Image (cartoon, rainbow, N blue to C red; front, side, top):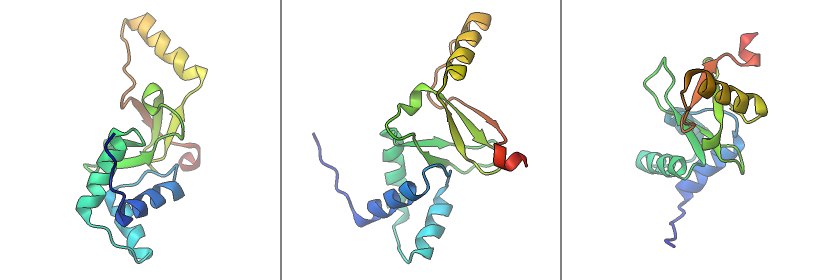
Amino acid sequence: MQRRYHSKGVQVIEDYIQRHPEQAFDVGTLLRDMREQDKTVDRATIYRTLDRMTRDRRLIAFRPDDTDRLFYQSAAEGESCHRHLHARCKVCGRVIHLEDLFAEDFLRQVQEAYGFEVTIDNSGLSGYCRNCRG
């Protein structure tokens, strides 16, 4: 097994994600937070780290319809995030994990009614969360 080098920059990124587990963020948000903390991390390190964490399924990556920026959010701790649906708020970007029987029932009904099997990787719904709906 290949051991990965764990730089201070990677640790800064992981610390940010741990402090904001339910908050979607883009690279700009991450850079602003680092500046506020008087920490600097090379952009290439940021992109490499986010890419690796997404491949390792520690992060969810998504591109909202209204922007060309890529956003990230921590995957559910200890969960297989690629096995359930996600609902993303169009206002705040929060991603909610739909893990209950409702989501399973919905997927089963889509398959039965339309003969369409939904693949879960990157599957999500968009709308407005309770807080942003007002």
